[in-house]
Length: 438
Image (cartoon, rainbow, N blue to C red; front, side):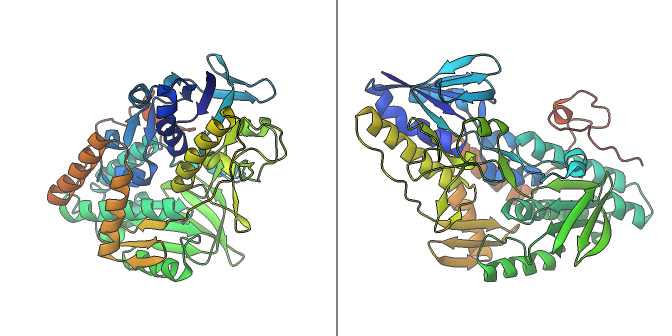
């Protein structure tokens, strides 16, 4: 029986777990999944946690339960080093040998060397990031509701998102929908022109990775909904309450009480130790059989955000459908090697993209069919609901949406951030929570 290690319980890792199930039952392989968390996050709905459309616990999947159901051993540990010559992985709490390994350890925020952003901008990668941002919005709305000076309110309620890709756009739209609904019904001492949400994007439109015509239309929709978009923006410095940037070579400053960095991701630091070539964003370049390039390690497979896979002359962006398809192929190739057969090449099937632009609006491209508006928005919801891998979570998310549609979203502060000197919301960030005086 061969021992297989899967590093990372994201989309790629969990897909591999499910496809190993029959091989585990037949006694051909023993599979162990290692992840620093005991849950997997459904990242496409992370922005909806900020708006309250879904509850945080409904978009996280219990890895231990999933592993038990598939006959996989789960270890909660953090990977520190991968030694491919010795077929060994060193984690914080132990070492693990393998015959075959699937590296699917996901990505981290790529601050592109901007030290001020590392210090003062908030990340948007995990569930606590989303909860933290939601709580800051509510906290600032509470404080703004007692202010009388419109300029002070505007300064306090100035939110910025650096990076106008899918993550940044969806976050901005959810924040905008939530704040607009709250000031209309509950915080009526705050006027619509006393808050602002700004997206800083280096490209000429937001969503530069999608069809240009749809990207342009998406930007028009954002602007019509009151979201500011600054194109051609190069961010130099992120302060606690402002952003210094250049546009057309001219230095400018924008007030920002909360700045969220969504301008790209990069591979984990230890991937460089695996060997082989890496991209500037620290992802391992892989062959068509999903092995690291320039490395004689046919038992090592790298998938998802950890890899850089070239398709039609360019590296594909790290997205969930790619990771899931690679997870299937990694399992197939491992089983072929065990049977003494040659691995086969991976072929990527591009489904398209789905981008939510807030309530009743979206841009969608499925197999070349392009849509936008309310119909596209509900297609977005149905598509992502179907991708949630656990039936009980699908039911929970569906009823979250029903409750949100019928009764709106609540604005409650369960944790007092100002007096939370040692709480989980602060532990999960590189800096203490920002405090804004009255």
